[in-house]
Length: 586
Image 1: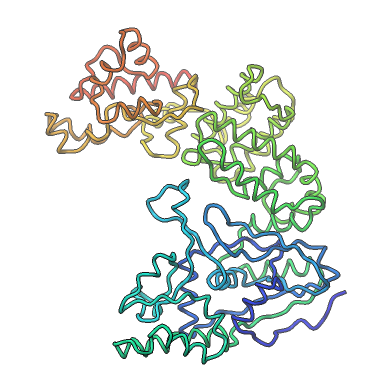
Image 2 (image 1 turned 120 degrees about the horizontal axis):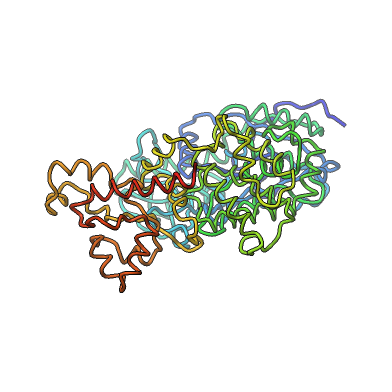
């Protein structure tokens, strides 16, 4: 039954809001996205509040106890860890009391709650992502003795480790912001200042600043009723969802995937869509050398792999009927996507060189239609499938056919795959798109352009992989400069006696395909900084081994490989590479 008395309520203090979050009176509905604010944003909002800037209004939803079990709710995250803990825990709702769900203001309230009750572990620059010590726990502190040195800020708020706060001196006294919750009465603020010798600081101005700053923080948290909120009491999900979409249409807009995932979560019957999909994204991102798939990719894959007629990424396609189909097929969809990621990982792809996640969707669809065979990645029975998929996948990435409107590729490709064939229908797909702006056919100009992909560009791996069809890229291969890139500076060229008239060509061409090869990690490390000709003589014990290497890597065999002959080398090797591209692509 809908209640008509929705209205603005009596404002509350930040302290009261924090207490309601802590007691799990305030929860997050499944239609909310996860926390995305940076430490800098949290610091900024505290500085703004201390300067009496408005925080904006909030929208809360009063969910009565009879309706609670019809929806999914999550707790506020307490100890945020940029790598290991970014997901909100699922709420365990018990008791007979109503709860209050946050429809607008989640990011602001989470920022306040984390700062006062939790920790924020973000990566320290220059340390490796897989190093646990790169993510120390930090709490929010306020310097009671000095103003901020940051442009545009007045109060010196910082996220610090416990060790960093021990370095107090005449200009720094770091007060843990959350401890203000323990100082309920003003006399307790005075007692704190006295106990820590801040009132008797030798610098009178600093003593006054500490007094003023801590009392200001106390008033902000305990006295100022700045949380203005509108309380929606309707129990109808469609009304609440429409309100939610409208209030999130401005500012830092809710991502489409967050909204669609929230709708799926509200409609799945036996599984928690949010928990399933977010954990699945984490799982596939750990495959091989790592990927950076997101929820958009998985949700889009669900639409295609469920054989839904409409696959556009929009709210209308996430209706209850479609959600039931996706939920019923989730296990198979999950397995097909995972196998497709493992497959392209075996092709050598990872987060650095996979330029379109959508390219995996037809691969996953084909694997699904094949019955999700566990042996698909390695069995000789699927060798032709893998070869055809690899070629189609590589060409699609190089030609960038999934840019713009990917549905114009996904829909007809799915239709082709639906018509059973003995292997992945590479030639049928190529024929289908001939003459369109999604064509996989390479013209002479297209082939010429392949020579000008550069080291470090995301598409360069795909171009190089065309030249190595038999290379087992499950091993760690590097894009290696045949003639070391460290040689290509003006001073090095002069030192090596390269003629002035050649130097411009050397500097312009050393980073292109003509000077790149795929080399395993250890040989590449051994080769570093060595003259190419010298390295060849050291590493190969027989002339035949040397010839085999040169043939495999398109190294011209009848010219000098001295550094001074780099211009001739590039010319000859480009001819060999272009000839190979013509064999593969035309």
